[in-house]
Picture (cartoon, rainbow, N blue to C red):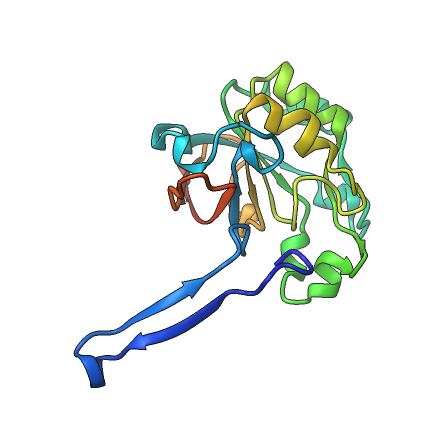
Length: 212
């Protein structure tokens, strides 16, 4: 959870033993756990969750792994040089892909302090602005995803990638992803399951990767 966001609450309303069936009332922040950001999360009037067609939620995945380069650096970010190095090795990034950034931070997600940083001083890696602009403007990316708490670095308190690069261009995000190390750099597809909340800024997500 983003520090300060309300935790998920689940209240059992009926049980099999008493009522013959089981159901709960669940209350959650839209950006809970592994989750989806719609463009309206930062841009007034932009698309909300239910206005994104299901067909756009099935995307080829490009996995850029910077975990070895940044190591334990909580201020590490995706640089334009990383993209050039990726393309030198794998060829040009295809158009209309979901760009998934592996920082290695998922290894810390059971330790909130290590994963997010101290309250009021968030620290975790993310997408750099220059690299993000290149991916959106030159490679036609339609989505960003990461294994950290957010697309921007934790130290970027003005959220420049969210507010200036991706959401204004209509991109959606996936945050707090898992198991990116199991995906190839190219060739996998992701299927993003989200609740089509009317007017929603986001939704918890179940993201499935199809690996060749």
